[in-house]
Length: 215
Image (tube, rainbow, N blue to C red; front, side, top):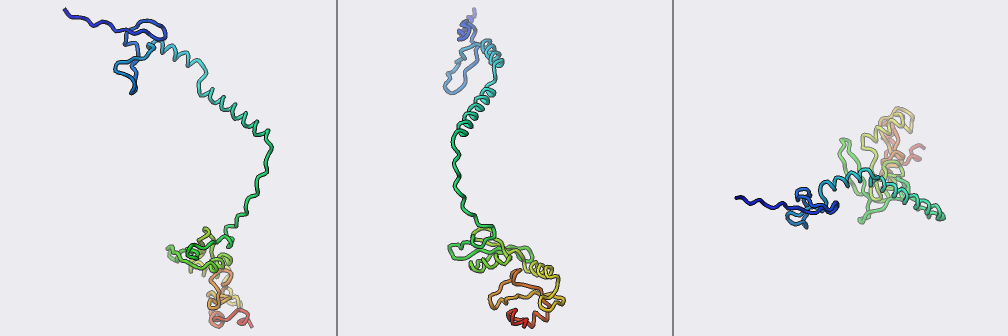
């Protein structure tokens, strides 16, 4: 004759009734032992869930509490006297040469592009960098770097179109570029120092100053 196993029951923590062990959910987690069950039965847990859904949702109550805190803080800040903010230090303009600072090697980095679009870098003196920025041939990238605005072809086209292909010295048609202050005497290839010139004036001026050539 087969022996039947006794029915295992457990008392519910909510309704205090003895119910079969299958009416209780299994506990999960590392600390739960093998075969351990929840304290409340499935029916009591469903009743608690239904009652909680009728009550105010937790997120709404949290939002309301947060709004009350914000209102209290705003009232407290409004009651405090306003303090005058300290004056901000003056910031140099993007193309202000005074913003340039040399590297540890005592130079400034200059970068640009060739006629074919290839990038190049070069180290120059601070004095030259300041002159190029002042005469609108370069712009400041950061305190150690400037960028040339024109490649060789772009610069030539810019000067000729700006002066409408008119020689600065004689007023005739011009298709060359001449330096008002020659490069041999410290002039640079910048929009301020370069003008359109015809071939005859360019050849005859050579490395003379503009004052002596015009005389």
